[in-house]
Length: 157
Image 1 (cartoon, rainbow, N blue to C red):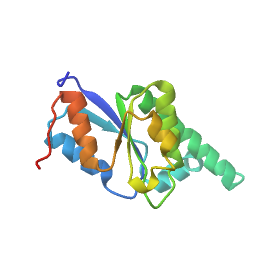
Image 2: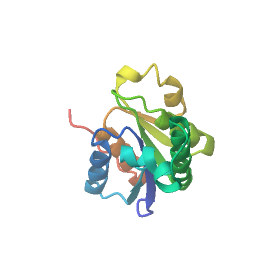
Image 3: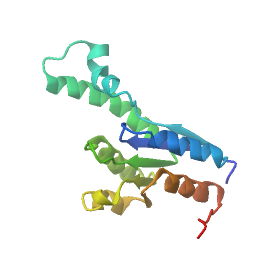
């Protein structure tokens, strides 16, 4: 199973380097993973609808146009993913990440949540459907190493 390439969808918070940490950790562990994600340039994600289709009559319709285009990418990548990692950060509310978690649950795509203990209560339903709940990108990498390669790296001490 460790030679089979996996696709891992990285969803959620875009204001830190958690994606890069996971990608570097997986590469260091020699895991056969292709990482995919939503568009992480906030302005592009917000403006794609009007940039492609033209002006919207209001901000509401601008958001609708963009969110629907983004949903094409999100749905397609989650459907193709072997597992998703869904990051909830501290500073911003990631409603799109909560949607992605629900979409994973509906499709049967296993997912790992990544968030601090401070948001445990708010995310109890999201965590309740997750296959793992991680606090750090390192825990995500170690989880992926275990499920993909069957290798358990024990921490010293």
